[in-house]
Length: 247
Image (cartoon, rainbow, N blue to C red; front, side, top):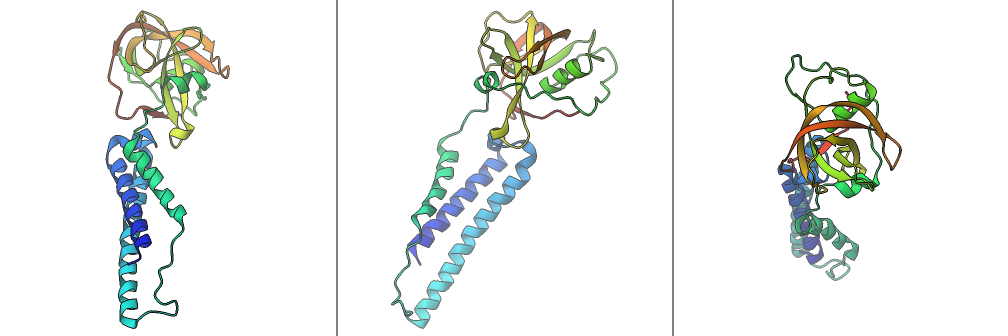
């Protein structure tokens, strides 16, 4: 068998197996949103099958050349382009480097992605605590004037970011497709905020709606405030990203 073809098949198999591993675990959530998991698994399977097919056809071709004798070129092997070894780079990146999810640095250097949704579904009835995402609270606070939020305790989870003036934000990054297009949605915190906040630390805050608004210092986008009554650190979730909330 052509050793170059063997190397190519091995790289394809390794890349496919790595993609399958990412898709079958939470590792893929560092790169793409959860809804793309089936496509990721399909791509990994195609790469593994392609590697197996490469080995099979090369083996059959080698047997045919052996049975028929050397061809017009005297049986010389044709060297494959060295550029094919670039396939090893994403494999090594996935295996050796597990990048952290986008965090406070991206949040403070990118303007808020908050946009007006198409509508607002009804909130649960009663006076219990509302558990909302950062994007949903921000959209309801800015574009629905806090209707349904007033006089009700609200619980929100996100990571901490501090703007250049020291204002604390609770943030979740929103994805349209993958981490490359991640953008933040921010809530400014006031009230019983912990005196020491570490950027990128995850907090679960409980509090109430505030009618105050501020502007994102990066793009002047709207950022609502949240009146904190209690806060506690929590572990980072398996899926650190939010899909863009559209109601």
